[in-house]
Amino acid sequence: MSYTVSRLAEVLADSVSWLSVRTADAVPGPDWVSCADLIAEQQAGGDPTYSWRAAAAADYARDYSIEPPVQVAAMFTLMWYVQVPSLVAGVTSAVTGLSPDVSPASLAFKRHPVAHYPAEVALLSDEVVPLAAAAVQLKDHTRAFLDGYEPGVKLGSLQRFGAVDDEVRAAIRLPEDAPYADRAATAFGVSLEEKLRTSCCYFYVLPNVAACTTCPRFR
Image 1 (tube, rainbow, N blue to C red):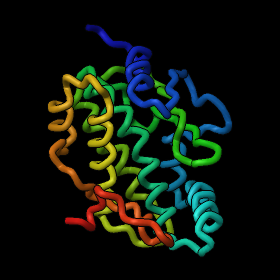
Image 2 (image 1 turned 90 degrees about the vertical axis):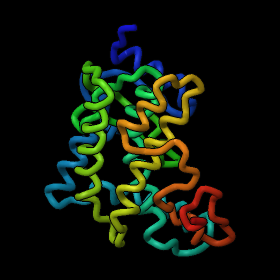
Image 3 (image 1 turned 60 degrees about the vertical axis):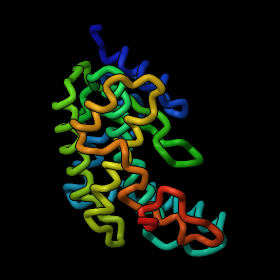
């Protein structure tokens, strides 16, 4: 079967119930975040995710009546960002063996107004790439983000890069019908047999919150 980016967008939307997906020739509007612009701002010494982290931290402070440790919002924001290219590449590759272009210039997203995670994604390129190319694009994109991500707290390389493995592994597992899942996992360098996450969200440090069953602390 021949796939276009529009068809791959439908595959992604059908597989991820909470995600709205569209194709576009440019970033759709002022409320949208260009992945390329965000990374460029980081590389220039800026902190474009500050307001994102601050909004999440304010919610935790309100909900748990404490000053939340910095690493909680820092890690959730990291995971939310890398989830964008990971979902696009992981889901579509698992279903079709192909992916839209997931380089920074080819993706934009819009955050959920209350829960803060990326709830809408725009695919800005009409290029469809094979698995091997998608794996390289995902690695380069997430490394560019992670290398410049300075959230005011130390996050080790296992946390940073492990989050990418966790998100792409979860993405590959999402579709009900995923005939290329094993091939996708091999291309992206993850094991679908792994039960525990590599990275930790730190949510367990908040009052009366138990660690999730896939927390790496259970190794």
